[in-house]
Image 1: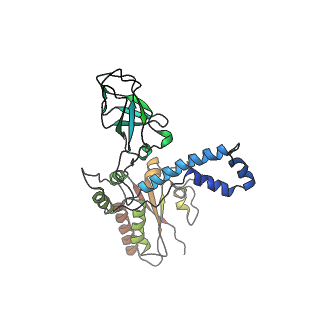
Image 2 (image 1 turned 135 degrees about the horizontal axis):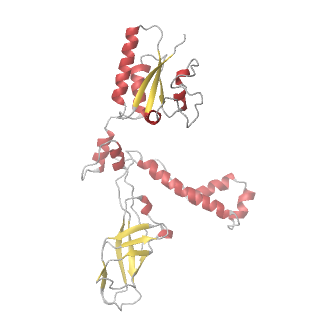
Image 3 (image 1 turned 90 degrees about the vertical axis):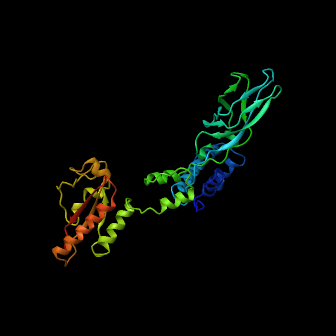
Length: 322
């Protein structure tokens, strides 16, 4: 069962209200009542950030399996018109392409627009060419242009033009399919969304950074809590100096004293930097060689079983000083 999205976008008015509360009233009020010089800068910035907030809301909701939705096409209606009926009976066929020129969003007609001998206006349904929320158009950005009108007879009336008769609504990105594909489990034909949501949610998480951390916690940190392991990914700056801890060992292969991005260790390949990680451990005090070898071997095989294909893993033994 889907869950209501926890994030909420801010409108332009809400963002302008934040500006009003932050700025001194003697500075803000003269510009806003009525809209004086300079106010348009705040209004423009608030409009831009409202769109960013809207995008963040859709992205935030779409990245979670509980709130991800099925793809859906925005729908609405348009009216085809002509100035006179001198051309007689004409039909604008379904599948004709129209667009909202201000935002370059294209739609197709789903019904034929049938003009009788004296008909001047016909209203038909339209559907977006992509499943996305960006096709939900408000009053300021509605359909206003014909891209390709398929007519019967061909070129039956070149004077026919199009205008919006409603806003368009219902467009949804449909990220649930992308989430499943990322996990290697594409959706089967006609699979209900709740069944698919349940199927991909029940998959064990075995390849993420979180899964690696849980593996290290289970096979090492829980056993030796006084000597916790540290996970360092290849792109992190700490990967260049991990062998320096707790003593300075400058000059080792993995050590680069410059250690400033985008530099990396002298013998670290680009693949290691981008697709590798190290688990740095210290030998616990008071354990013999057999126990230490057994513990590190178990940790190694657990990591190998957890990490994704193509990811390189290394266990680094750090010097331990009592």
